[in-house]
Amino acid sequence: MKSIDTIYIDGAFVTPHGTELFDLHNPATGQVIGTVRLGDELDTRAAIAAAKRAFPAFSRTSKEERIAVLNRLADAVEARSADLIEATIEEYGAPVSRSAWTSAYAVAVFRLAAQTLENYDFTRQIGTARVTMEPLGVVGLITPWNANAGFICGKLAMVIASGSTCVIKPSEMSAIQTSIVLEALHAAGVPKGVFNVVNGRGDVVGAELSASPDVAKISFTGSTVTGRAILRAAAETMKRVTLELGGKSPMVILDDADFAEAIPFALMAGFANSGQACIAGTRILVPASRLAEFETAIEAAVAGIKSGDPRDPATAIGPMVSQRQWDRVQSYIRKGAEEGATLLAGGEGLPEGEAGGWFVRPTVFTKVRNDMTIARDEIFGPVLTIIPYADDEQAIEIANDTVYGLHAYVAGKDDIRARAVADRLVAGRVIVNGAPMEPMAPFGGFKQSGIGRENGVFGLEAYLEPKAVMG
Ligand code: NAD
Image (cartoon, rainbow, N blue to C red; front, side, top):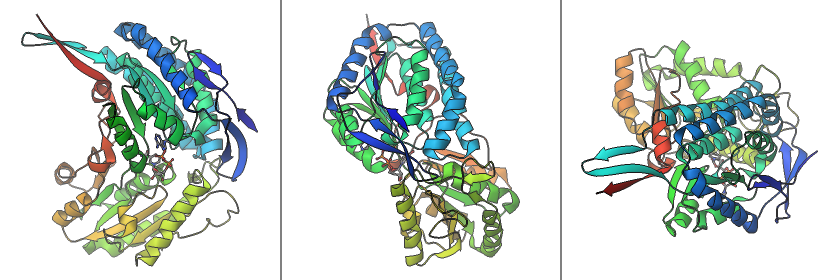
């Protein structure tokens, strides 16, 4: 049993004023593996005050000093990789390969931010004006449980690069992972108060950050519902916001696609991070003329996907993060059947051979209409829908017929045609034919997938405000 009973304020691990204890679970067994003592409004205010005190000095540090801090942070998190991988498997249930990837990502984001900073010019001349890009002040970073270390480190990296200071409120469900990240960040020797971490509930610590007049910006990743609440609260004090919210991303399979390549691409896009990914490609658009062929091939491919013990290297899909998330995914599978979609693979209940834990059967529905609930709502689990279409025009229309616009995928033999389809999709990012992610490219969504962009120069500028001086 792990007991996490401190938060981090002004460069020190301190006992929170809040006294509520929150249980932490191993999703692969459903067992309680620890507790975290949650901070409250007073703790949040103390953390904000520390960040506010640290801002004047930190905002005046040079680019070189901040690059050095970022590199120290990368080294410090890298030194704890093994512990972080273990905690990500234990507390989140991510399969081994995914845990390794997210831990490496948490290191890479600091190095990428250092690189962005290296090449960034904070001053430019516009006519007679000298325009400088100024850091914002205290930033509130609110992160979810589906890539805890990556989100904390990614957002913190840009805060540091910009010269701002911050209070981080990680997901209360990820406290063991957070404690390891935090020990690493502490070891990097960052000036005290530059970052502060308060474990706590969203409607307590998160709400206090969103309302505080001393917080200049909120950067949030999580659900659209919570994003809306933050945006409303932030309006009161005119806070800047970056909101990375949900998605219901289309995977457009063109009629010239080679299914031997397109299906692994679709399954990777749909089932990555056990389906608990905002960028998941959950609506697979398939040409009606090749539907039967696609169904046969994807059914066979899904039969070879293991959902189960995250420590088994053969496992591709680990458990859902919580009982609540498991129930939610089950209810959507039920709803899909009720609304008349055809179940092609998976279904309700545990995968064969699993007795405990929050495991889900990799599930694919076919002959889905885009107005069905399972094609509208973000499910956040390994549940995919196949939606047939008549021609490219209709595929594009269906792909864009969603309140979201975070991500999209296109598969087709003719690259030029596939890219032409990609150009017409309303999404912050489109991946054509399994191309690798570009980490420096902007990340974020259109429509209800959020506001603003993260990563690279766009991500850095989201923490800066232009100031023009004339004369
Ligand atoms: P959530 O949006 O409720 O939680 C994300 C973070 O926001 C957590 O740190 C939480 O404590 C905090 N929060 C909650 N209420 C808040 C409030 N009123 N003010 C400020 N902060 C608040 O997400 P969840 O409940 O963990 O998951 C629910 C659904 O959200 C999932 O099923 C999924 O659809 C979606 N989700 C999306 C992402 C993503 O990457 N886009 C990540 C996690 C969850």
